[in-house]
Amino acid sequence: MDIKELKTEFIICDVPGHFKHKAILLDLINKMPDNPDGTISKTDYTLPLTFEKEYLQYFHSHIAKHIMDPQLKYFKAKSWKIGRAWFQQYQKGSSHCDHTHPGANLTSVYFLELPDPQFKTSIKIGEKEYDYEVKEGQSITFPAHLLHYAKSNGNLRKTIISFNSDFYFT
Image (cartoon, rainbow, N blue to C red; front, side, top):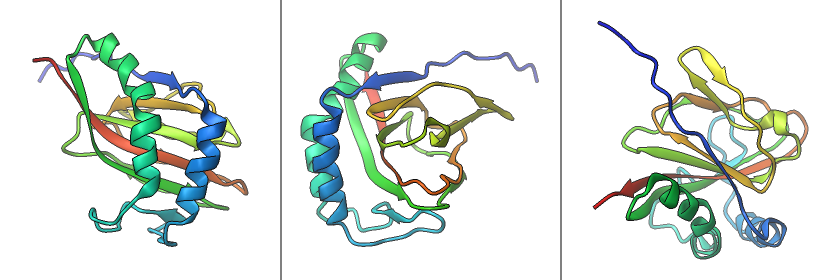
């Protein structure tokens, strides 16, 4: 088998009005039930899909377009769709093991709280970790098949909203 290196896009977007949105989203996330999952302190990923998630309603109506519309233009696509979306909150020492998002084309991570950029989502291409710069109030979008993880975040709380998406060209 002959394998060629394939270049891929990693898209970082700023979310306008982040600090206003952050306060509202954290308030709505704080109303969610405590629901740890493995080494993740709090998430709604394992809650039933029918569970009402006010923070997601806010996210979809106030933030998603600021992440997705620039990508739509970049890819010269006709439309976009967000599939599954969830939050993860990492308290002292929390982490998330290597994983991918099967059945999705792209994955995005919106850094709602990122007190230290060293605790950003780590992305691997093969055995090599992809190095990128991101700060709180930004999102990164990357191919969903890439292995990624959250290393232990020390003593600081980190909160992300993650989602899978697709672009349509016809």
